[in-house]
Amino acid sequence: MTILVKRLAPLHRDALVQHFASLGAEDRRLRFGNMMSDAGVAEYVRGIDFHRDAVFGVFDDDLGLVGVTHVALSDGMAELGVSVLPGYRGRGVGKALFDRGGMFARNQRVRVLFMHCLTENKAMMHIARNSKMRIVAASGEADAHLELPPGDHASITRELMQEQIALFDYALRSQVLSARRIRDAAFGKPETGA
Image 1 (cartoon, rainbow, N blue to C red):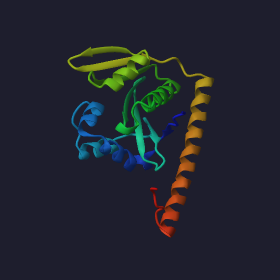
Image 2 (cartoon, helix red, strand yellow; image 1 turned 90 degrees about the vertical axis):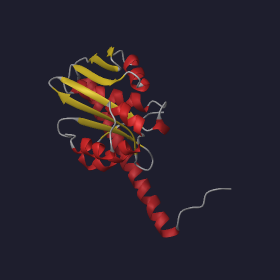
Image 3 (cartoon, rainbow, N blue to C red; image 1 turned 60 degrees about the horizontal axis):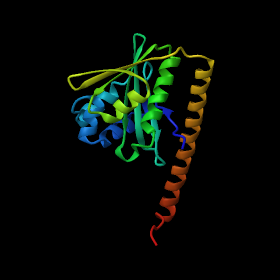
């Protein structure tokens, strides 16, 4: 199954807050490295600079964000953070988000992709190991680095194509969702069951 990853924009801030709020307290701690309240999540999302950084998401059929990666750019480096809702883990969503964030960073001439996480964050440690990141762990925290090859015509074209396909998929899902809502408003929800 192909997992389509779409670049997000400021208009997705509410969806991002909802995504992070849907994570349990322990998942938020693993994602952010400390306990994060709903107000803290909202403040984090408000502080995202969509013009400098990149945020990518994977959507479900109801256009809810099931996975998110934030790629924060700074001085030739990029720091990446990933979160996936529990019901979508183990399906490759985290890996797809990591790969998409890495491709973006590479094509922005970033030489080093960096990830900071708690060593108990097994999912991120797994992604880091499988991506051949150099991991340094101490005091329950881990820093992982990956040297990125320079972007080239092929990587830039691949990134553009992936974004266009994800955008088309998002538009199609949006139309299907709108049609479903109109149908439900006009005729009521369809009955389910035997």
